Length: 450
Image 1 (cartoon, one colour):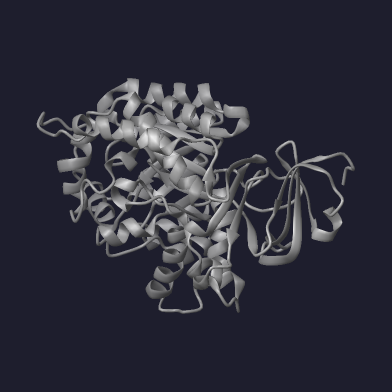
Image 2: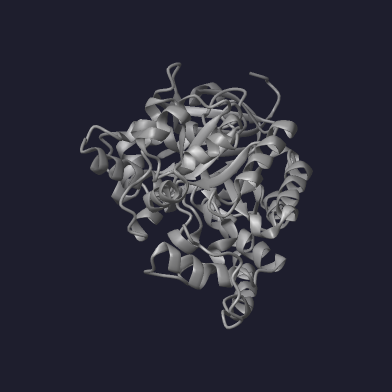
C-alpha cells in the first residue's frame, strides 16, 4: 500500500467480501483504501490509522457493501409513478402508459432521469441498466450525477429501420462515455413488438460491433402461451432462431421461461443473463416469477431489478432483494432457498455480471472500481444482529444507506445528495405533468397484443 495520501479511506466498518469460491463473508473492523477510482486495499482499520487521505469516512456501526446494480429499469418513467394503478398488463400499457409516452419530450426524460438517479443513489444503487427513449439525454444525466449505467435506446419495428439505426448510433456513440462509467447495448423492445427480421438484424449488428443486447422476453406466461399458439415457439426459442442467444444478452423478467427453454439458455453462444423485478409481478398478478433456481443451475446469472417506477412504484433494489428471497422460498416450497447469503450474491456479483460488469464491480476487492455503499445498522429495526446477512436482506431498508460512492467519488454522504438538486427537479417536473399525462389525443406509441 502506497505511503502517499489516498483519495478516500473508509475505516472502522464491517466489509462484505467474497471468498475464493464467491461465498459471502464479512470482515470486521476493516478499512477500504481508494486511489484514482480503484480499490487499492481492503484491510484492517488499524493498518490505515496513520494513512493520510484526501477524504476519510469513519464508519463505525456500518457495513460496507458493493454498490447495488438495478439490472433493468426505465428510469425516466418515475414521472409516471402511480399514474396507472390496479390494471392488467394490457390495459396498463395500451390505455395509459403508451398513450402518455407519446407525449414524452427530451426535457421530460431528463427530469425523470434526474429524479430516478437521486432515488437510486439514496437507495444504494450505484449502477443501473436502462432501456428507454431519448437515451442521449439519460447519458448526460448519468455523466452529471456520477452514477454508472448500462444504457440502450429502445426501439419497435413499427418505427421502421430508423428505430434500429438510432439504437445502434446511440450504442456506438456513447459506449465508454462519462469516463468509462457508461456502457451501452442495442435495445429492441421485445419479440412481440420487434419482428424476427429486425431481431436477426440486431443480432448481426451486435456481433459486428461487439455490443450486447438488452430486451424484454418471456415477460410472463401469457406471452409464452400466446407465442406457442400463434407461432409454435416460445419467446426464448425466437431469440435462439434469430441469433440473439449467440450475443451477450440481458433478458428482462423471464417469468414465462419454461422447461423447454432451459437447454437453449444453457448452451448460448454469448453471455446470457436474466433480470428479475418481483414487485411488479405481484402488482400485475402474474402467476409465475423468474425461475431463479433453474437458471442458476444452468449457469445463467440472475440480477436484481425494479423495472420502471410506473409499474413498480419505486426503484428500491433493497426491496427487490428481500422479495426475491421470499418469493423464491414460496415458489420452490423450500425455506432453505433463497438464503440471505444467496440473495446478497444476486444483489452484488451476479447483478454486476448480468450487465457485463463482473470484472469491474460487484465485489469489494483490490483492483476493482470503487463503487461502495455504507449501510447503517444502528437503528432499532436492525438490532440485535444475530445473522448479519439476514439483517441486511430482511431487516435493513434502503433508507439505512448512509453513503454512496461511485468510482471513488462520494455521491451521497450522511444521506445528503451531493450531485443532484431534487427540489428543483420536482418543481420543474410538476409544472410539466399536465401536458405529459394528457391522453385526450388518442395516440399511443405501440399496441400490446400478445
